[in-house]
Length: 198
Image 1 (cartoon, rainbow, N blue to C red):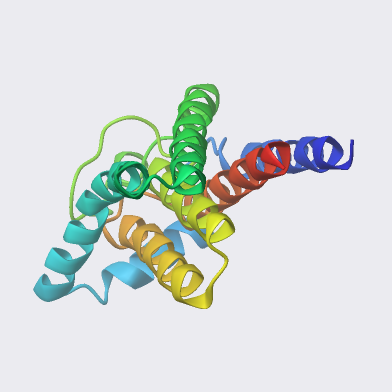
Image 2 (image 1 turned 180 degrees about the horizontal axis):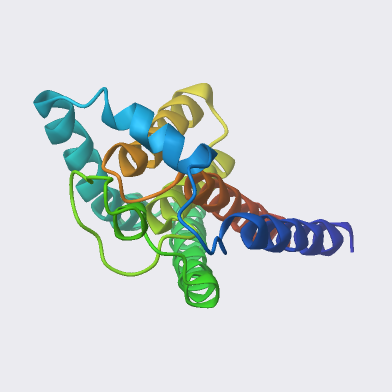
């Protein structure tokens, strides 16, 4: 089937990309860390608060969107809305599981652990690649946009997921390549599930 071939090609590409960026031996100054250092030079206290709030709110949004949709569907007796809620919640949950598995495979250290002279705004546990916040944010955004393909749903969804992605770099807990892989993972898995659903 066409969707399965594309799905496998996506994961093969992600795997090759992961091996290229996720297995550095020496802490060299590459594009990833140079980008984070550039972002760090622009930090302000106001931005600290804004991006911490966005990052912290991500999990609540990922849980709240499907629950809110399901509740609204139950109240209005809207079967399609309830089905969309299950699709969104399932997509985000599957993305989270796959993301966790990839982190355990690649075991990439977070920027502030690898580069002792790089200061993060906040600390985070676990591994860096791929970004879990980014993958879940894009999973929720893409599945919501696919369920309700209107500009007033798509635009805010993509602005939100992109803001979450940038916040993780701003806070110093993820490299740009972690973010790119997380966005691809969340979008790719969700699209695959959407095709299966059809």
